[in-house]
Image (tube, rainbow, N blue to C red; front, side):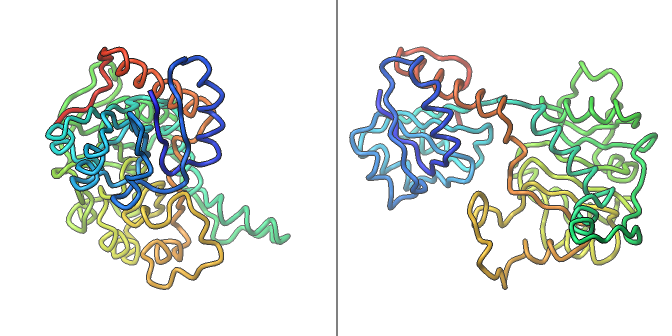
Length: 329
């Protein structure tokens, strides 16, 4: 089986080349180009392609992949909202993903954002680098005995719930499907969670129902001084409404690893550019907002799991087997 990797970063090539010898019969070519209709032709002669979370695998892309006889789309990520699954089925392309590479990696990053934002670590770090050891403007809040609201209690949300519980927080949650393993969690309605929580952490998938789950109406139901963290999908939050809420002093702190505009910037170096019309730049202007570049997954353990699971998926497909990682419409 020959696989073309799109949008390859240095760490992708490093980890996949490390484990590839354990999968005889699989050949990988690496391309820096992003997957889009204009670059599908790069996969001529390949049996499969591999894309990441920010690739828009729409109907046109699927059609062009089918035209050059690509039979498998490997996602080296858990999310698949960017893939037209109906088109994949129509054109006979199997889609496989990495459903749980490291829930703890993402949850730990969510807590890192929480602590950084609410204790103003980012501001303190910059001050001390300039020999400014003053404290005004760095006042934080305790998490102990506060209420954490977890939206979505799958593997990542459950890991975040356990972390919050370890901090001595009361943990409440909202999910269509309750996680019976979380015996310390109280499930409530979404409105109750918004009303009661001192910390709200988002861990649900992006669907039609959850798109802009956090808008100005939801924000108005939150406590004044709430902490909001999103390590799931940018589209869960309506950015313009979030900015309005920040300007209304609704939030004590906001931590974002994902945001609506990220497809334009994520994983690229724009340090020499002026983002004059960017909502991301507007968010960065607020002193109580911390933004990272969709890096919650980015640990050695997670990269290893992404690599081996992706290669396991390719092997299973080549052998005509299913392993539960297939995504269907």
